Length: 273
Length: 348
Image (cartoon, rainbow over all chains, first blue to last red; front, side, top):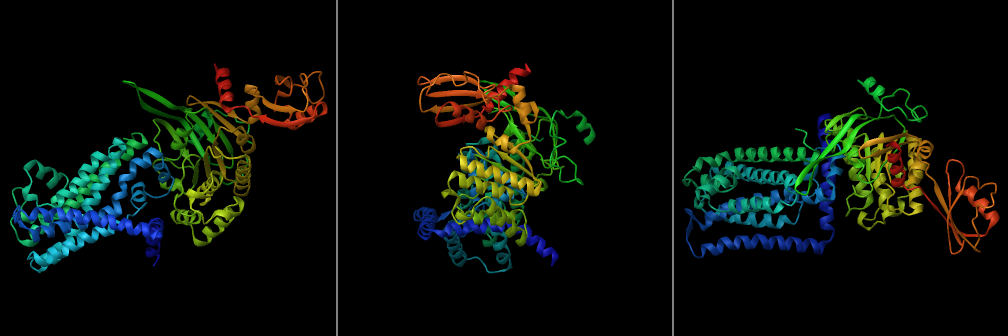
């Protein structure tokens, strides 16, 4: 009882901020509906891009349209949820310029945790909906066997994908301490990474496989779990059993993210190391 | 360790003994800085050079003191505050705030320190003031009872009742500053640091804020450290003044001592009904030591300088009123920049 109360009260500050953010976003209904609508549109356009591609080819990188839908759905759902809860880390340069990051130092919580829970973008729920729909259709039509492997890999892949993308956002935020105007550069990797994640990694060139297969482990968020679920052979350098290593990719992504964040924070405070 | 710091402290403070020490059991310093130094690498054209923002600051501030920390822009005030609160890591030297190491013990320290940045809001701009307080209460883990008691106290003393449900972005500057102060003090910190708290405020708002800080200190024994460009703040609120210049401590003592050191004068500007020659001539009681600086409009407006240590604006005004009908008046405070410049010049 006592322990639940302490953990409850430890979470209270974060809950209080998040609840107020969520409330303020829904306060203006029309505005919120428009936000949801535009977010939905972005998701649909990106899905349409895949569909347009497949009106010209029947298979890409050894995958049919239905199978690509599975990859797209996994990646987009995981990314949208990470974007919803971590996307505002992009705003760090604004905080740095306005000096408002200092306010976080004056509160008795870890800086990164405060920053993560400082906002939530509910409008991205619409885009997550597109991802979820694509995933549903993909699962139903791509011929995934409904065995234990799929039942384990599906949640494992989603959670790991979510965490991998979240780590990427933290990595990008850490770099902002050095770049100040560098969100363009880091966005290239974050949003480029999202785009890469929705594609079959089998079409990538070798340098691309190194960058988005391993350094930014995007192949692990959707393509590799999908390949494993479908029982397809993996391409060069990316064997199918790697699908089971999605959690390792998430750990790697966070390791890199936290290291970068720590490094950035040190730099901000004036080189403690 | 602390004794070493005590002996090395500058010790010129006239208020060390008279400080309102309401915690006989807890005599440990609230701020203890020893050789605190911070350098920045700045780009100067093509070259990089080292800028020393704070240079070997050694100072001890006891519980319950009210200290004005003054200096010109860029003298190192904000850098010092950031080192005291764990935002910046010192390049050299040591500092303990509330007995804690600011950087390493930042989260514990945050529970004991409240900071108000005059120019930067710590409130949620799109939320009503009341909701900001609720979130901050959760952040500082106040119990429901503590939260409602303290909020009620602050709302009453800072007169926030009229705009508690208004989003912060819609508040006037005066209202926002009062809300900022309440937010920084919600968790009843032992040390309150105010960075330019009265900047841009009208006379009435300034006065309200000062009165609140005085009562807060009296009621709770809160230690105050404030940076300001407003001599009025220093006079009303502070019993000790630290002047920092080019990162170095240039003065540590009380206000009369500061005025003595620099001979800062205040200036009474009077607008008269009829033009008159120099009001200080012939000499009259109440106008001793008052200097005539200038006349405009053939004597319709006269500027009279007086030493705040020997007389008051009211006395000078009374003496002037004996001689002439005064239509309007203003009192010019000694400019802090000027005070600092004089101190710097005196130290050469």
